[in-house]
Image (cartoon, rainbow, N blue to C red; front, side):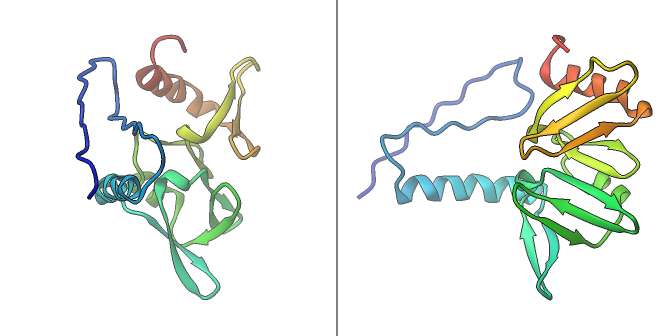
Length: 159
């Protein structure tokens, strides 16, 4: 028989999004079921994205997406280790993805702000972005101010 779960809710006016931390001695089936339940609940608001793979369809959680980019006439979804062709336009994805997590940095690219390792605001008029998977991109000039505003809103006035 598994132990009862201790649940503690902390109200913090400075928190923008809910955060769940699991403290446990070791990872058990119960812990995995809790993680699955939380992920399934959060997916209901922001569903997984279907990608084309080997003649079939695979669903990618929005948490796994690093960026969505347009290359020529095709649109691709990038994860940590793969790039998948997807059906739809950049604008379609911009409207469907979690707006707290994703930001459109140019006409041809949307990035996951939670997968950014570094923003370089030091360049005059240009901002470079480095993602956790090592990929680099540039923020178009028209998106620099909205990006700064979003980062200030999401991560505080230290921006």
